[in-house]
Amino acid sequence: MLEAEWQKIAIAYLKAHPQVAFITASDSDRKRHQKYRCGKAGHPDLHGFTKCGRALYVELKKPSGGTASLAQKQFINEARNFNVKCGFARTTFDLEAILAQ
Figure 1 (cartoon, rainbow, N blue to C red):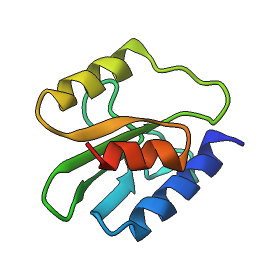
Figure 2 (figure 1 turned 90 degrees about the vertical axis):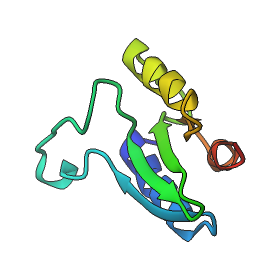
Figure 3 (figure 1 turned 90 degrees about the horizontal axis):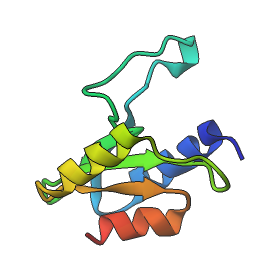
Figure 4 (figure 1 turned 180 degrees about the vertical axis):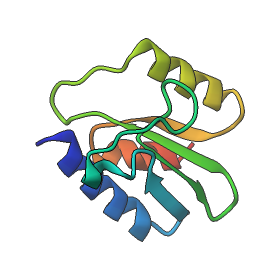
């Protein structure tokens, strides 16, 4: 499965989740093949917030393969220091673990 396919699945899953108020792709102009950086280096693929008001960041990785860059690891670690629900996700189980934080 390509990461783009996983992104569609993850967004649909999170949009339907009862804890999630809003979720979107950080690189939302992908359809026009125009990439742009949203925020600082390492900014996760998905961002949004929960219904209880906590920020939500998800860095998607292909179910098999794909490694996190140093900038991505640093972003997630920094966000965790501020009580943000965040992490890396290869499966819907990973998404649930992030939401359980």
